[in-house]
Length: 140
Image (cartoon, rainbow, N blue to C red; front, side, top):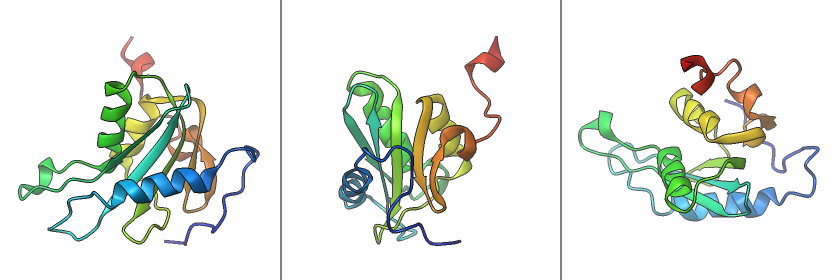
């Protein structure tokens, strides 16, 4: 997997990606990862300006572990809802990582139009991170 660019490149040049990454690193420090040793933190900006974050929480029954993105989306709804506009996910060393497929689906459903994500290959729109996503319109 290629390393993430040290500084994001984006047409959204006024956004402070490094501050959001710092929030993700702070969240990662609270991760509970005694089995894999792989801590993850995530932070997102909400359309009303709030920042929400989450960390992974493992469980001895591996399948019931919680991804960092689950915690962040839970905090999003707990603190007033809204839509995510910017997201970054980091590993235990603070390096930018790409969320797994399940988490991309979760982020897609909770993102606003044009949500941006700092990925291992730079800043991408959510529809580039998860093209042709399944969503609420598919249930109509």
